[in-house]
Length: 85
Image (tube, rainbow, N blue to C red; front, side, top):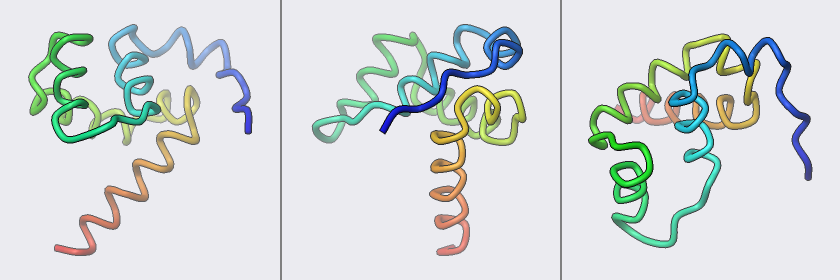
């Protein structure tokens, strides 16, 4: 299943770090700690800061235009967690 390329305006609107965060979220990770290690090594961010930025991105219409599949999936996960509380 192939994803359509993002709209040129959405690509230009998101900063490189924001695009990198969404790209990292598209990947699968083999075990515990692998994602946190990738966050530190590839993005140079503490995991807490990463998740703060990611959460803000999920509410950003530019991120939705850039990668609707990932953003909508993560929004569903977030809503499910909020409902469980």
